[in-house]
Amino acid sequence: MDEFEQVVALSVRDAVNTYSTSTERAEQDKKFIVGPSAIGYCSERLRRLLDRQVPTDHVEWNKAFIGTFLGDGLEKAWQKANPHLLIQSEFKVTLEGDTRTYEIPCHADVIDPIEGIVWDFKVKDGLQYISRQQAADQGYQFQRNLYALGAHQSGLFPNHALEDIRVGNIYYDRSGKEAVPHVQVEPFDLENIRQAIWWLEEVVDAFLRGEEAEKEPPRQVCETTCGFFTKCRAFDTDVEGVIRNTKHLDAIDMYVEAGELERKARKMKTEAKVILQGVEGHTPTHTLRWKVINGYDVSYHKDDELRISLTKRR
Image 1 (cartoon, rainbow, N blue to C red):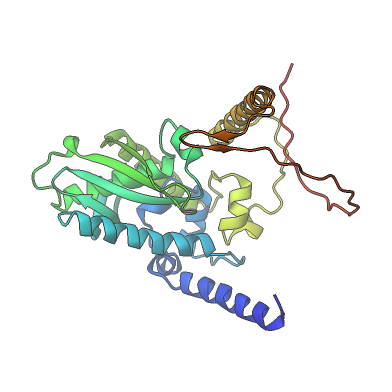
Image 2: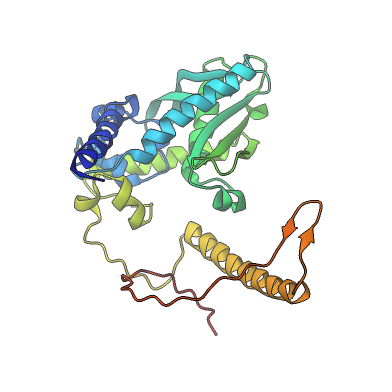
């Protein structure tokens, strides 16, 4: 890009960030309004918001910006095809703690009052990891069950008992490479509500004691998504002896499996090339031809790069 093109590019980027920080959810952060999406994500981040601390780090809002508009479009498209669906319903969920009562404002993505299901859209970069998960993340489970409880308390499920309601997430590929979303749905779980209340009470207690709360997300996630990173985790060590985070363990399994598939694929292709040597023609689905790629000499500098090193332990 030349200088003018660079100016325009940065102007669009800045407009995205400015717009995103003026959205309703961002305004909730400024007003320190606790919503279901904040429960179960990061205890320390919520404690800082309750303490009226203001995030100071710059955060790129590009992914959230795309996710917001994509989610809005998905809800409207689905409702147009299914007019009985309720989108962006506003209500409150009342939670009874051991010593306190909480009223949490909710904005549920989609409610199906006929089937008795609360749906929450999640926009992701690819669906391979999500499709391998046995259960949703803690925060997602809290969020969708809190929506279900609040919707039932508000009379949005007049023909369904609370125990008959279902909750689900619909994961949509942000890149557009996978047209079919991944869906997770399960019965409403009162135990998730109890765990969410316990989680919230722990945060409130830490706030009242003036102590730091638990920092659940991986440090790398905080660095790119949280405006409190410099104050909160910049000086934490990156070195850990044992990897325990379930997301990381699942990702390692996925990486290992992908490597095994790559090796199998290379072997299969090599064997097939030997069999097909000198063969050209058509099948009902493919055309086979052989091409000669001339060799060449090249001399250039290759910049340093980070590569993952994952070896099997003996």
